[in-house]
Length: 487
RNA sequence: GCCCCCAUCGUCUAGAGGCCUAGGACACUUCCCUUUCACGGAGGCGACAGCGAUUCGAAUUCGCUUGGGGGUACCA
Image (cartoon, rainbow, N blue to C red; front, top):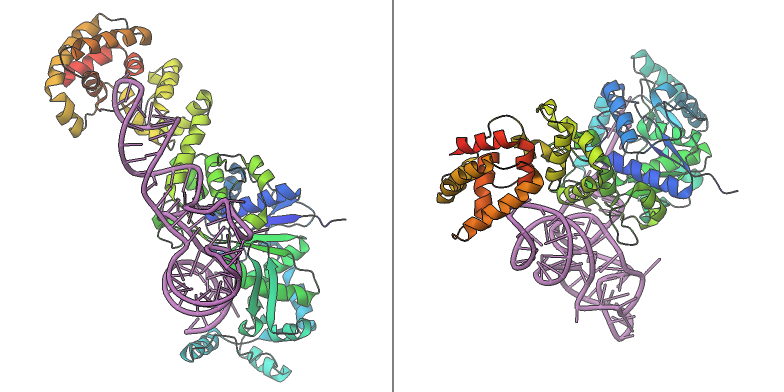
């Protein structure tokens, strides 16, 4: 029987769910779906100081919003829980002790100052910094002396010992799912700490114990973990366990090729949502960073992507997060939304307006005629401003270019007079305006200019929704009043 | 400093020795449609980082250089 595919997403709650973490989570999810495996959520909160409940909530909410529902996790439980590392603190020491007993780990009494000094020395000598291993062979008497001083030991993994026990050469190799064979000289890996002196595990140790106990078959993560992989493989070997398969994804970088951070704009999934990005568009976009569909069709649902997904075809290089394509994709997803759905999703971005001042029919029509150019939902706020309130704000350019011009002075009074007698239905206005335009066209005024004059007076700008619909939604009284005011 | 990873249009990518005078998408741009903006449609601009090697033939293989990224913690 083939081994069950089990993958996980393991965010550290030291911030809101990062877009990069979301992509890693997505790729794991896609892999699990494709392989018919299980998807596990584990919260890696071994560093209590940086953890907060608000972040945990944000991570849960964002992951759910993204549709990356987990089969096992802190909230839903599962056969290998608990799924929160801070609730597993009693597990790690046992395994650390096992390694000590087997001779693959030892107590280290070095102080931060001593370690720092070692490191500085290495740098001075221009050699790779590797822990000296001075605590490797401490006698009981020496240990006691340190304890008397008040020192508490950390536990270090003995890399040399593991190397000699399991490898012929000092080169450690593993086959990465996306990058192929990767190598590292083990003599350059210093003995690393697996248990801190405060009794909590370090990241590399907790991850191995958890992945092992949770029976992870594949570990797909960012390439910033490549160097950790060697250490983790060594731990698996020393524990006599089979390591999972590893796959390392390229990173997502900001346009300036640096790490994506706040100064580049949104970094958390929730921030993108607040800005008016549709979660489906975000997922689709992020899937295209490093992966491409076999049929070239880029707008795809998660289900479609999962069917077409092959981890070995994922790009091994970094990719840059550019808003242009995200924006385009978001606009595509907005277009696909039904009117009713769009009306609902737009509401948070219309909070500053009194939606009760218009009927639902008017709201519907308003959304219908303004939705076309939206790239993000929040664009609606500005797009719709002139439908609310009595007066309208006229921007300088429109005033100078249109309202103060000859055409407006000629067209507007005539429009006011004629429109007063018009029936304000879209159908009728369409007809009347066509006549109106035609009349001025014969006098050498372009249809465009005629309409601009009216539009500028009524909306304060030269661009916007369909004129007939706009006039109708506003109603005759407001239209005439605004035109008079403009003059 | 040391170690590792990566390298096709501005960006995301297709490409696994001849199908490539390198394809698609976004962006940019021209034209068309049109009561504005937009949408949509038809075009255009635009890349194999450099140098060597292997080969009849290289974007595709190898080496070096350069550039970018990551790691180098009792952070994760």
